[in-house]
Image (tube, rainbow, N blue to C red; front, side):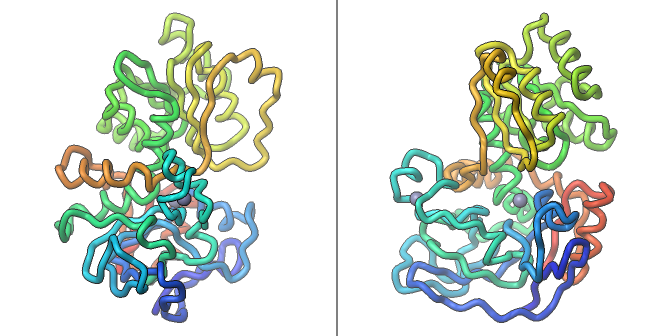
Length: 340
Ligand SMILES: [Zn+2]
Ligand SMILES: [Zn+2]
């Protein structure tokens, strides 16, 4: 099969890889229908994470081709959406809703690599969720978004306790930030403030439910959020970038007793304890337990109540993955869908 391999930072190739096979009885082989490039794939692309002939990709939808002898919940022919973290969905941590910290958690990006024609998915019963039927092709981008960015944005909004009567501020206008805007709106937030400087992304944020746009960053961004909230700060703040500035902006924009949900993958962010202490806020974040939210999100997409697929603004065949990475690196694209 063909699949993406990152030889080293900035060097992405599509080449022949070995076809995946069932190894454990709990595995499934999925023939992928579509996959995509994630903002987090730019970390190794930019040399911030090491990459040495690394298989790439962790977002995926497709049709089950084969299942191991112990798999019960999905069968060949099912159309499935999977999370970017493998989970059994049965351990105590999963049952409590935190599937990304499952005792069997494994990152799809590290060993499986779904920017490929096929993938072996361990713990298929826990990781994969079948759609109610074969989807219309127009639903594929939305279902693919559920695999990570929608699920991550949704978790961030839940972690920030976005809901009726709340003012929600979203730091970051990448795919996850935009999905967090969608989630905050769906969860019933009264006001959703998107922090963005990018005209196209501002437009999409408004489409997904942003009521206000703030272009300022850092301390000026915090001041602007306070100005819009009677000097109090937002009830719910979502951090979807992962830099020192964006994180401190998110902490500063949260009102006392408010909630901060952080999902921007961050390296080298240091949070001064004293600032967190005096902020007096609730914080919850980490790799999103997407699997926990998948049944609900798939249903919303199936019923056409949400359209997260608009977050993909460039579609390329898998063979042109290198161009997709380049476009995202240069910020010419927010998120790239790869067709198979
Ligand atoms: Zn991702
Ligand atoms: Zn588990």
